[in-house]
Length: 377
Image (cartoon, rainbow, N blue to C red; front, top):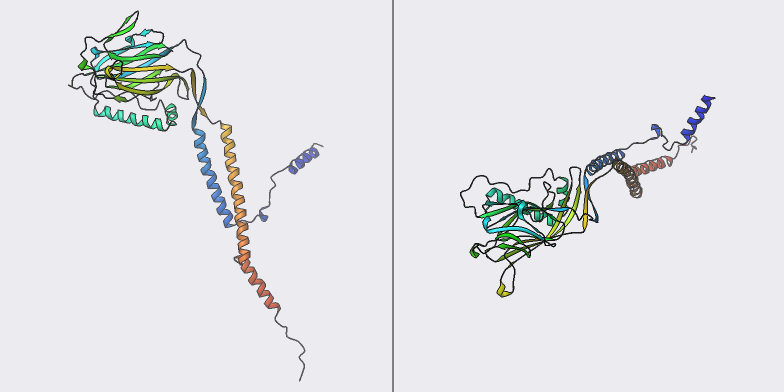
């Protein structure tokens, strides 16, 4: 009984076979079919390799939400070189709450304003990358994914000690401020704080020494991430007027970065630049200096690195193999049909041989047979 039930089950399974086998004696092979098969296999292999590279690649996904964190502090990272001596300039930050943030976190270092040839090459390369980033925003995703592999974005140190005078001041460091709009300004004189606001002691600085030519080696907000290039990195402004004012209007966007290499809370920003000459007689009022006015956005951007799942890769791979196999089979059948129609119409190929054979058979049938009985005369 068990054997009978097993045989019935096997016969039922055979009847459900959707892939019946054809005997090799009924299969006809041809040179064209073999050529098409080689092309199909080559296309399958090539597309499968490309699909594997797509599977290995990743892309960045951007999500937007309201930033509800207003109680935390905002870190400002500064590295600016001004073409004036350190005892003549001062830097401080004033926010909308009229709370002056002193420059305790900033350091003043006397340096040489002119760059060495090696440093100039670094700056030109950085400016070239900046121009490409403005034209092709997709390069920012490449920086996000390869940030730990990138070259350091800090200005390289000088090769050797120079005998030139230290005619500039490098202001660098970081300051923690409230997450409200504020103004970072660098102007003549050291800042002092008083109940009515703040001021800079500029009475002892000669007006002829004013020179706010500057270079922004680095300016960022939030956590510093190696390899990330910010919009103002490498910016250099040269002026020959003592009354020049430089203004940078910045919108800071909180950004949460989640990649396979790093997870960090940082900030992106966009900037608008403006510069003008202070001339009170012409109605252009203000104070000579460098002013960075920033404001925080209410939106937070989450940038996460995405990867194609394995099941999707296998489905796409099966689709490639099945699609190429079916398409080449249909194309082979269509081309063969067209060739048969053309050969039949113009009597070419095998159809010409068949016609010659039929004509020869007809001529053989029309030859008269010799009679056995010939009448006598």
